[in-house]
Length: 535
Image 1 (cartoon, rainbow, N blue to C red):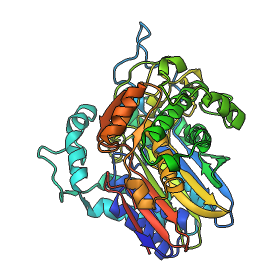
Image 2 (image 1 turned 180 degrees about the horizontal axis):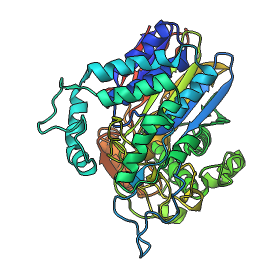
Image 3 (image 1 turned 120 degrees about the vertical axis):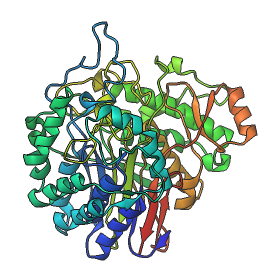
């Protein structure tokens, strides 16, 4: 998709269209992002949300950059061992399913914080399209119908009432979903602002839902929640400035470490998804994810050595033992355990307006439909972000990510994330806005997309379409999208000692590239219903 003036790329065509209409009607990129976010809460309920949280990275047309942390927080009653049994072992599912899995939602507060600083239209105008869709209903895409059918058993198990997503029949493409309870929640927010969610009727509904299932979130947790403006992580790669998210997101630090490790090698000459390129990326990734486990957490609670981790001298030493003759076994990097598979259900949106303002927002409930609990009467799912803490330091979470003491559970603490909303400039001019869902694969998907454009000379849609690979330290394997590697490359990698695991999809990028002539190219991932639209 090529446009002259403005562009939105998001996970759903209706949400993208709403964001674009906001800009056509005089709103800026931040207005459009807010409207798109609320629309995703309606039409993309497995990840779009008012009951979750996330991160935003912003670059205004005067070159100023900023980032907002609206990540969820642990409730006041949370404690380090809350997911361990009497023998000190992890309870099955308790950190991922049901009421205890939910952190205090940050999404609504985050949207109001963004609006207060950068918005131009009223919040009522930005929320209204989502109210209308909730009441009018929207038609399921084939993928959306498949996802609802897959989750029916969990909807029934974890809800004490019939949600709009329950059905005794098989959902089919074209079926209409209406959400009158969600419309009421959105109207409360329209009328009462931030307090329409964190106080009053909706807060009462959240707390009542918590009390029905041994959840921990209280009225005080809701009232006291606040988003935090943080200095973005920034660095350079082949003349490009990379602007990304700081902790408690691990994304920005990990991305810049990977790029530092890549810069000394001629991967453009080696070729996209060649043996040497894949080997280098995998070796870098296993070391960076090991650093992530040891050092990263909520900077309001632990000292995160950001400067040290991003020092070129540190990363030179860190990557110095990479050999192109043999794999470094992950057990020689550190220790870990074989984890379960991951859920890809986060969502990302990228926006550029006609004035060159840009915003990248990644937001999530964590797993698909979060903890599977819909707040009775309020119409939205709660997150299961408590699983992103190190429930038992040294053991993997649902994404296979291993954490240490820096990410242990504490009251009011924000859990570590892999979300990597990123903006790229070149010669002080906006060049790219990128991001993706994908759990632990978010960082490596963003990394590869940047390499595809900067090193391999791809356009935005081509870079998004390109097949991906992923390594995360443990399990000690290279996850490979079907069709990503030739048979010869697969054989060569296996001879070097790589364990390959073929997988269906990695990531769902939503990106925007500023072309040399100033036009905008949207890249929306064909792995989902993602859509880029512009004018």
